[in-house]
Length: 284
Image (cartoon, rainbow, N blue to C red; front, side, top):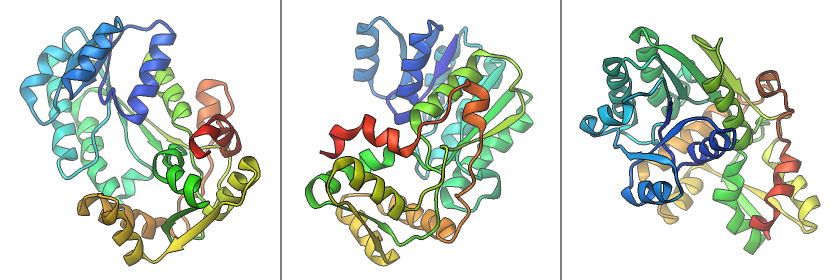
């Protein structure tokens, strides 16, 4: 039995689809009861948990052999992930696979600093563990930029010139499914990327060509980018964290391309061009 936390999230939902399609025994964990009810109605094993409420965890962990740990980004993320790790150890769960972030061990960004204590706790816990450290998600283009691309032909981010090896969440889910259902991954750290590194200007060129209309990247100053995030309703904590991430990788550090997706799944990672083709409707 595999417990997948964050079942309604970008990675968690993709992972659930992959595991269920392959016939694995899965228990989906959601914070909202309506998501639990919907999953149960679809014939899935589903439970409500709140990582901030340790009392919700023991029953969800009964009979579980492996946990896929996804914490919701925020000031309480570290404590919540530690709650799950502690509960898993008490329940005797053999293994935890943690979704982390790019270069988490270096704590270069506030987001990495949220993840690293949970990584260290797992290493000290005596549990089997694996860390998945993906680079920036291609899905950020559909979640954050698609509306602007549709209406204005532009998308804006803090000014950056260095390439980024964006990775498709579907590839992250395939890797996670492989790691969760096969042996030989204890103590391993997997850095996940797409097949190439692109600047935002490169991405705009791909979008322009495939959408058959001009798409332009607008590089904003940090202050303007922060103001735009706040205007869209993003809480200050998140806006400040994203600005720090941009600063950390502005001149390099996110351009490395790995072969991990291919090595573990036997499939080539999704290119950004293929991603845009698959999600063309979101941009049009």
